[in-house]
Image (spheres, rainbow, N blue to C red):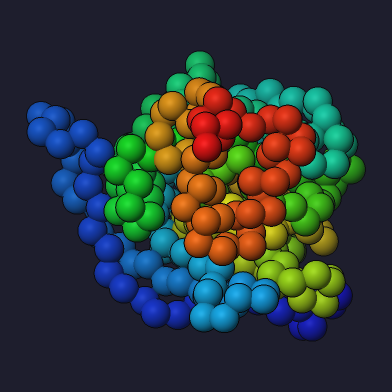
Length: 267
């Protein structure tokens, strides 16, 4: 659709945030980070008074941090062209955290304060998940002649997903959500440079880059390290038992694919 006809997610309900390091009592602990959170609430199809919520944290990462991440992404990272898990096309991605561990990459020192002092404190508080961990993180690129889209999908393996905006002024399009079937229902998420967007497992989303070059930093978060290491998703149990159709569908799909972890099999 032409840019003027595209729908964008509308965020509201702004509130102040104060986030601190995950490890209390650390002698080198940084002072609290202060910022602003907004949210967008999209009705869950077929469920009255229930919503899929998108959280937007403004400028979670500083201009200095983003500039350095972009420098490293453009000049030092090697991107894998192995098949993507969603569409099997070359992924053009580089993992920087896997199984809860930072991989040996130039980004490790940059990511630690963002993850440990801002991202995880927010997730642990907002989603009442005191042991939440970043299980996986990766940088993706969308260059002319390479990947231009990522089809609509769910991150069924993740307790929640976070996306850090890196270079919004260099492309047209980007992340979209599709709360109900049909391209006409897509809403693009305007993520500013240094902004962080978070959503749960129940939100269909994808990427469409119409022009330019896009880089993004994606975090897949689990409720605890054990879930990360076992590839399990125990958070579906209570939600499915409470009648959440998204949780029931995701749980059924995990069993159908045979990728349910040990904890998912204990019922």
